[in-house]
Length: 226
Image 1 (tube, rainbow, N blue to C red):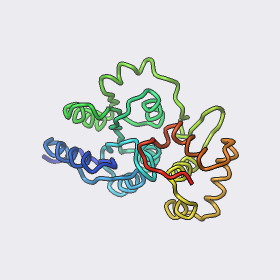
Image 2 (image 1 turned 90 degrees about the vertical axis):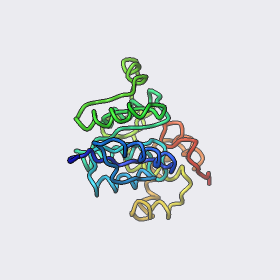
Image 3 (image 1 turned 135 degrees about the vertical axis):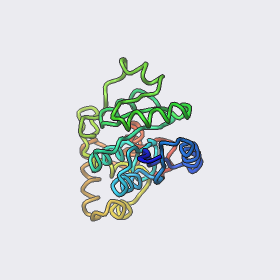
Image 4 (image 1 turned 45 degrees about the vertical axis):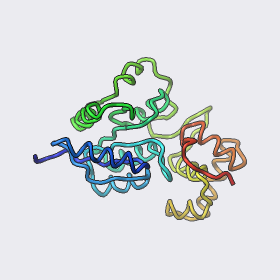
């Protein structure tokens, strides 16, 4: 079959990637063209391969699925992002809707639901899993503005500050963050200082707790408080 729907899988668990790849291979109109284990890898692959649909997890190292989605939709607007997560809380759904994700289903969904979701978002439609769809009318106020920036208690963080905050919370030192983001250590130091000033938080442990409380990272991600 020609013109198959090209799919990029993004999840940091090998068993999930293997399972999704195997199941999607049974769909005659779909083709998995690559896989990513971090949000940053997903963003780079999306820019390189221009998949029709990215199936995106939320909790991934170095760059979470939320920020990866923002960057993918900005860099490759023709690509659709479908969130596949174990978490279907209203707050998570709201955040991805605000960024422009085309769909959101949880990992308890059947393969039939996933396949249908991929087809629907590829057509330019919006798709939500049955349980999520029922709650949309009653969802909480989004914690992001339309530019993918975090806003909480009158505090506005830029997209770059969100990236730096995640890497700090995951235990990276300034030198490691600078290498990961390909910017200078001095710039990282400035971002760290601005984060502490904006949030009125003055230690790494506090920044980590804030990152967890706002969903930038999850407690399932391993990190070290320095």
